[in-house]
Length: 313
Image (cartoon, rainbow, N blue to C red; front, side, top):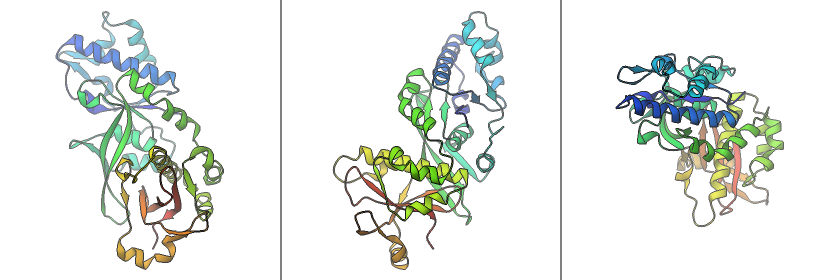
């Protein structure tokens, strides 16, 4: 699936103080989208009311598009940019589309639902904003993901969205974009065969081989890839001392004492050096009830992956 930008509708909540500022915001937005397109993003997903957006008092987007004082190339670019409205239209992965449209799943920022960020999160793509507030002047935005899982339990976790409101933000994501373009694995077998190439700072226990190869659902496959990349980056940046798990975008949990006792055999996993280690630490994968268990006993620069699959029970 081609990479696409997703517009953050929250960045259009506040009106510009004057038309000149509104034009400046749009000029920066166009510059950001042009740079993203240069890096391979094919178009932008927007809300249904995107073209009715009001930039400043008595200055809607429709007026900006016909404003002769605005750079003609900027106006032409917006008209010719491939736009998909509403946000969830033509999402080929039905599971992702269902999740995007699920009212029991929401992303929120400072108490406001963020539909654009939600779509960007599940498509693993770039969210873009008008640079209308200091809140949007950053290349990554943290939000709260709130959802009801398969057991009707409320799950809350922090997620980080790749973001841009200016050209330089896109340039900061150069490595991420290249990796995102190169990591479209077709199935679990390809993921396993490319594990050394993709995740140089992770070690995989032998038992993980059939677990990864058994992943056939494309939504879960992308979840597995995402979590592994997060752990690989964390491991790469871990050079000394104790590992700071708070640097991982996904929430990490240890198994409870009762589960450690109950599932001691399943969690005591043989590693490549022949040593059995307890794999208590884990991250969730949603949608579904999957877990990825890992161990940090090898020390800086190498996290061990011990289990990927449904919650052990």
